[in-house]
Length: 328
Image (cartoon, rainbow, N blue to C red; front, side, top):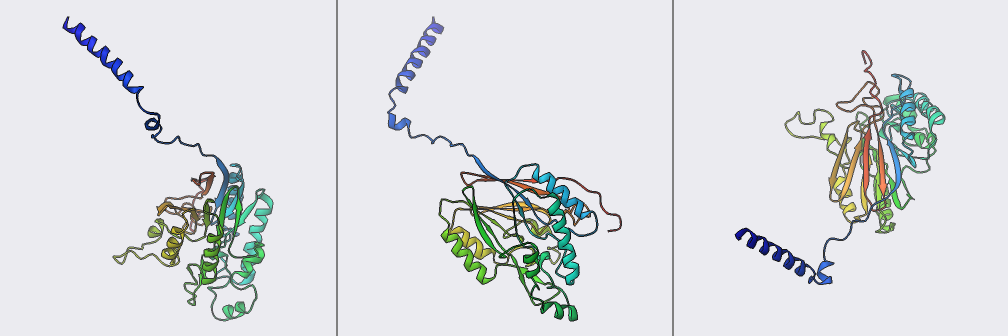
């Protein structure tokens, strides 16, 4: 009898609960979390940085392989993130031109996808030349970035464009310093920074923005590129990461539609999320300059998916793991 009485109470409670649930006002019921709107990919980009093509170590064949592999993912366009050739900084003009000719040959043979190009430090001609070679190069109208701009058919060293509801900004993050041992540092020149301020201001707040630079604006893997702690303090060189990162992060903070920044240069890969911006350093097509992996990272590129809600998915693709070159 006691058990029957308990079951009766339970049944009554269930009826009471059902009755109470129907008494909730429509206003209260509607105050829950809003439904999640599904996002849609509007654009796929392959980010290929630091291919460093030259006439040794199978570099030309490696770049061809990377292009074929990346295009199989059917990107809407390719971002070439700089350091397309092995090095022009310390080379005389003929050697630099020969490397650009190799780049042009592999691109003509393999590239079937629209593309945009960012200048890298090694694409710049002559800044590390010395003595008579430096003096002769300095009188050439193509000295510095002029040669790369001509060979890559670029009208400007920095620019922006719109596609699929996104705004893309391509920066030139390599600036010359007087010391030929160093050659360059990572920052925007004042003219470029003022242009960037205007470009961001002219972009509607509802339009998400992605920024491409060769050298990382902000990165964690720069700390591990060399023994940067050997003095007992962390010392990241000004060639490794933008020296004007404070200025840039403050500018980006004023424009919350800046969603992602892509870079290369370090040949390592990471993701840093800071103040609402995701910074992706996307390894290197050449890995360890075609000698095999660099630290833990072999030859790679990134597939970057852009969505209509302003979100980004960035996936690193290790397309092969070539053997190290004996004695290199």
